[in-house]
Length: 160
Picture 1 (cartoon, rainbow, N blue to C red):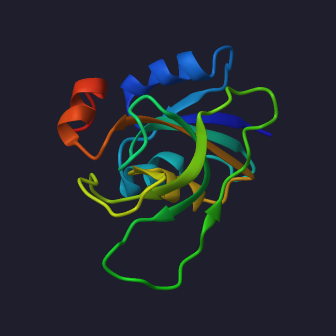
Picture 2 (cartoon, rainbow, N blue to C red; picture 1 turned 135 degrees about the horizontal axis):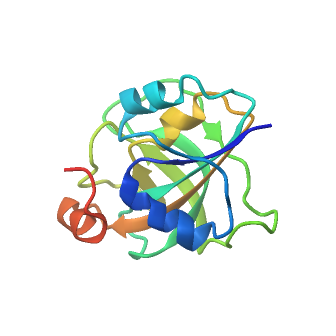
């Protein structure tokens, strides 16, 4: 079985070094958002194990909180429709850091600046990764901001 670490941007390599030390899996930089995810992962075998690690926002988790994601969904707060909940594999096998908390990750097509959703994180990639159908999919997210694009930029120097 092949193994990959998935990051959205080059700057997230520092998270790999800090939270997955010694992991020598190949790193794929996917880019931000659905189209970039689909294009970056189209040739990756679906029987691969992947770990997505990256930054995420949260309405109420402290900045710097490490979150193990238990499931991923799309964020569409203005409408409801039947949609799959994408369960993620546990990181509780002793090989990975113990996260500060476990939570749902809502993926979006744009940066989330406000939300009534609490006790969760927001990103722009994970649901699109998990929907690809990899054999094992795990995720760690570091809270970079409390739904503030300015705070995100200050910490990550990421996507504009």
